[in-house]
Length: 426
Image (cartoon, rainbow, N blue to C red):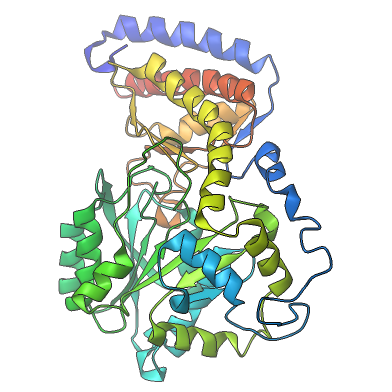
C-alpha cells in the first residue's frame, strides 16, 4: 500500500475495507496497555532475592549501621555498584533513593535556584534560561523543565544522536542556553545509541557554552541490551577529562529497570565541584537516603559480572516482545509510505513515525479499539509534535501474545488513519 501512488477510487476501497476490519476489532472489547516502559512482573521477580538478603546484617564493610541517619552521598558499597553501572570512578558517584528522575529534578532545581558552583552560577540570575531538548525525547524530562519554568528549545535526533550542528549553533547564538537533556544509549524513544563523534562533541560543549551550562546525561539504559555484542557508548566522563570540561556533564542512572522498579537505587556521577553543589542542596532537604536498600543492592549485585548476568535474564524476557513489535511493523509497512521506525537493540521502546498529521488519530482509534498508547505529542516539549507523527510503543509489560494482539490493532489504526487523511487532503 503506497498512498502516494493511489487513485481516489483505491483510497475509498481501502477505507471501506479498513473500516470493516476496525469495527471487527472494536467488537472484541480488548483491554491492552503499551503506554509506559515498566518492567513486567516476570522481570521484577528476577530480583525477589533482595527480600531478606541482609539476613539481619545491616552493617557495611566499614561498620556503618545502615539503619541509622547520615551518609548523604551513599554507602561505599553502593558507590561501587554505581561505578560498575556507569563506568566512572567511585569517588565521583553520589547514591540516592529509588529514582534517578528525583536526582535529575533535584540537580536541575539546585542549578536553577541556587547554583551548583555558588549563588552567582544560579540559572535564575538571568531572565529566561533555556534547555536544549533533542526530539523526539523523554516526556518526564520536559515535565521537569515545565515545573521549574525553564524554556525548552528543540533539536532533531539523528541516527547518531542529537543534531550537533544545531546544538552548537544554538549555544553559540543564544547566551541564555544553560542545559541540555540527553539519553545517550537506546535513547527514549528512538533507541539510538550516540556515536563516538557525537559523544566527543558533547564533551567539548564546555569550550563554547556558558560556564554554568550543564548536560543532563540520563543513561537510563546503560546495561539494557537485547543482543550479544551490543553497541558500545563512548565514555563521556573520560572525554570531558580529556578536554578539560569535567563540570559540563552530569550523569544519571538507576536500578529501576534492573531490580525492583519501585525500590531501586539511583546514581549521579559528576565532577567534585558539581557534587559539592548537589550535596549542599540535599543537605537542606534530607538526612540521607535509604542505606538499607543500598546495601541490599550491593549484596545482590556485588560486581559487574553479576550485574551483566542479571541483565541477560532481562533480555531473554524482553527480546520476544520487541520481536513481536518489529515483526508486525515490518510485515505491515515494509515497502510502503505509511510510516518509518527504528529497530532498537536495547532499551524499552520502539519509536514509530506515521505520515504527517496521523499520529493523534492513530492513538485515538487505538484507544477506542481497546489499546492504550502513549499520547501523541508526549515525546515533544509541551506535548506539541509539530508534524503530528511520533508514537512511542512500550512492549515490556504485556505478554508476548498481548503484544501481538496490540500490534494487530496498531497496524490497522495506522492504515485507517493514513487512508482517511489522504482522502481528506484530496
